[in-house]
Length: 200
Image 1 (tube, rainbow, N blue to C red):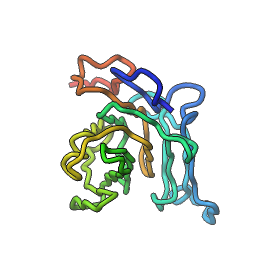
Image 2: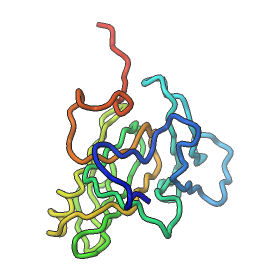
Image 3: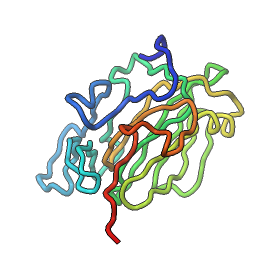
Image 4: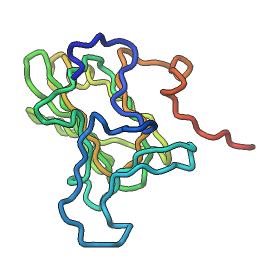
């Protein structure tokens, strides 16, 4: 999708504000839902988050494996993003959550990295590495150094990201790639997570 575009600075693949935030994404929900109970019903929907006073995408399900969004929306396409840092702005919903990134390395091998808040140890297998992720209460900024993870897990060089998949349960504000780590003051305003100022 982005293979032939000039890539530098910031490259956003999801932003919860706008007419079609899931334009590049496919949505996956359980085929049949028996329960009418809202607490157990799987859904992918836009909701207003009171903590950041903004519209967000909420992905919730009692079974995170079958409720997710994936980019690109077509399985026969790949992202082709070469920027090595993946940044997610998401809210901890105090439930199980995971996300997955598929990359290509310099041996032309496809590798997957899956981070979750319910796994205790990192496991490296030939084509998938699973790792624990600690989320703070409320909103989080997760920065994922794909080049570093690829080198440490497989001893190879990161080439490009092919696919990103976000599973339940979370609220999403933005997902983007960068060429380097930026400080908060260097970020454009629309890439920051505005939180209300607490009165002392």
